[in-house]
Image: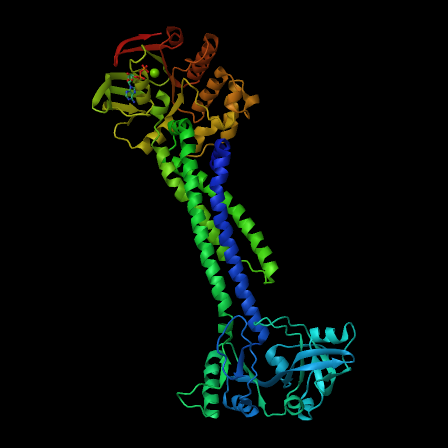
Length: 407
Length: 227
Ligand SMILES: Nc1ncnc2c1ncn2[C@@H]1O[C@H](COP(=O)(O)OP(=O)(O)O)[C@@H](O)[C@H]1O
Ligand SMILES: [Mg+2]
């Protein structure tokens, strides 16, 4: 330990003669660890964000929408205007498939909403069952939820989202007030807790919820629904249940083999896949940049170490004379070269860490620290130093004390 | 008494390209523990070459060399390092202190490569520096010391691992005569403390401090006398 400290001190003294070169050499390693840490933390953040978004939609959620969703993309709307699904479909899923824990059919349409002189042109109005909150992870902040009775008696009551409430009521408490949805006066019985935007980026707080039967009778005058939310009993049950639902609905809708479905069972993982793909590309580019930086850094350290070994020929000769073995010399210079690279690497890791925090903050992603990313960065910086030190340290062992004394 | 160094018909040939130069041409030499010997000869006579062989910095081309009873010929590079570290202290004409280490750290250098740990290492180094009167400057860089002071530090470094044999190759070559005398006194003091000391010099005044003078000419020992 003492030996290492003394050797490092001597190395520092000698590096002092090549300050600029040393700084340039460490810069490569700096950028290497910097990009590895940024990329590692960002992809972790994105994965976490995606997970949160999916969980935010509902636990173990399967979404069945009417009609075909042609293309999944970052802005896939998980709602549909088609109405091929029936309440019977929902009941069949609940009764026939034991892997379901809850089924919540839902209708959807945009309507103008008015309160006094304030008119909002198109607010999403959802007809929902009492189960909806459980299935979709919607909570009520104030007031009371929609009950079985509200649905059965088609009561004209509504739950209001935060954003809509602010638009209509400002600071006022909306609970108990009446608003006009399209031409149906509804009493507000509760305000939803804030939910933020969904996977597609829609503000989930700018909508209204009324009992499903009220919605079907008073707003759209039909029996069919746009969407059926199904909660599976467990995360593992999701995939098999999706296939069972597909099979069941094809039979119920009389769809033959060669025909296309008139509904879509949404794969939430696919919805978020595009984002992950983009991040995957950034990760790859970041790693390539990191590899190039490490290579440049290692070459820089290699040239520095050659200079240093040359400058310290006498020191090496004297060390050999007083009894250092070749392996002691090799170890000494490998330590020095890896010390240079690890110093640059640690600064790069710290900078990359701060950078990823800043980016995540700007993007509004959750903070996540990729420990494997940090370890990889550290290992890569140490490794590039060691690799860069191999040739110079072997060069150092070629220095013979007799040659030093003679000159 | 068993000799510390025993050389029999030691030869050293240097090869430079196609030319081979035989610098030592059959050296027979015996150094017994506690001796204070001077190796004298003109420049180029092979003194340093002989010194390097005695100090195991180099190995003979042929002959026999026993150091502390051990055959040196045929030893691996690592074994020679270990041997030097344990048995030999070197003092060179150009001091060769490490510029980026302090005086104390320079003295400690041989302890970094010891096979067995040493008790009170640092106290020992400070004690040696006190002996030469440079204790107060142990945290200085060597370049702040005079030549004579640097050479005294180099002697401390040579003494640090408590070797049997102290080898000094022209230790006063860069010093004025007064300082040179001080250095020779110091070496004599080390000899009194039980070290075997061998000094290489071409200066008769310096050689006069030694108890035994070995003259070398053209690679052979030509004359030996008690000093
Ligand atoms: N490593 C070597 N390679 C070639 N020639 C050498 C080497 N070492 C010494 N010599 C030659 O051997 C001769 C004796 O050198 P040296 O032992 O240094 O003499 P001294 O110390 O007595 O002045 C010189 O001619 C020198 O050039
Ligand atoms: Mg010489």
